[in-house]
Length: 168
Image (cartoon, rainbow, N blue to C red; front, side, top):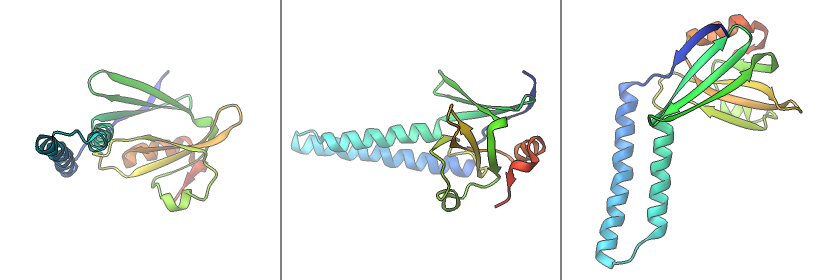
């Protein structure tokens, strides 16, 4: 498979600061629960559970990176990698693409018949969210891939499929 274009997710310093502040907030909630336990001697399972969910959400949104690879044979591969050991690929057959856009507008796409959305982006990435709508499975049901990429990636994708691009 010959690559046409490859791009790694990036991070901005402003978003790193926000992520650190969010982590401090989640850790302070753990400290609050620990103080409550020391004062009462009772464990607040709901509080600890919710804090653990928030920490897991933070890890998922911040610690994973993504690699987008466009192949000449009309395929897109999105590689998720994170935590030093996790690596998973997701392939999209671009011949089954309905449309794609350089800006994901939730209110616009809510009215479509997209059955499910696949989120593949890092919240620290400063690039805008993009959307690729494609047919999935044997019944060709619509799915949406939400990702973040540079304008250069969209230009290359647009050269591959000029009739599928929607300007929002």
